[in-house]
Length: 193
Image (tube, rainbow, N blue to C red; front, top):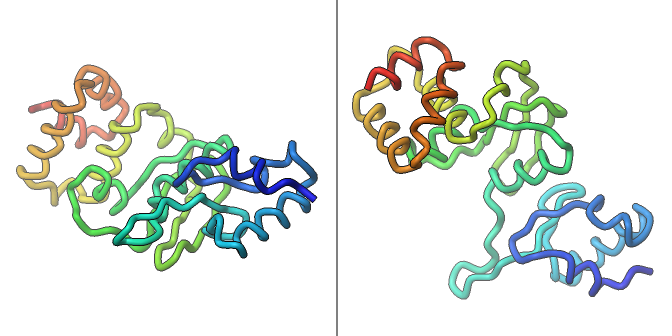
């Protein structure tokens, strides 16, 4: 039987964690049962099979669940995979859309899978290495957001918003350098400003 307090000391509020984070404390089955017990005692929350978090509690809102991007990032780290937010997820993360997507999609070089989290679905779609070749997160978000909008649908207001994001990031040179690997139409839109 594992000491539950040892597990609780190892995790931070709001942090996403997995059974595999604690296998040095005991075998897989012992850790799984300990996490189940902590869940039953409402000391931790289960997000999906094998995925847990230590809740942050807000006096008015109650339990604050991790954001889908935080969950996806934790899964990618565990699996040693790369991910890129795509579509409406990239638009939302950049502030180009206020809609919170019910289906959060990430391109990955890891396993293809879907994870149901409350009323949201996190989907990992396998992609070719070229789509993951840019290491810079903000550059990837810009490229994926523009792809989601489409070449013929990009408005001047959206371009101005992206330029503001680039300026405020203080990484203009790095972003422009990475955009040279983006589709030509995206390069023309961003680099011509």
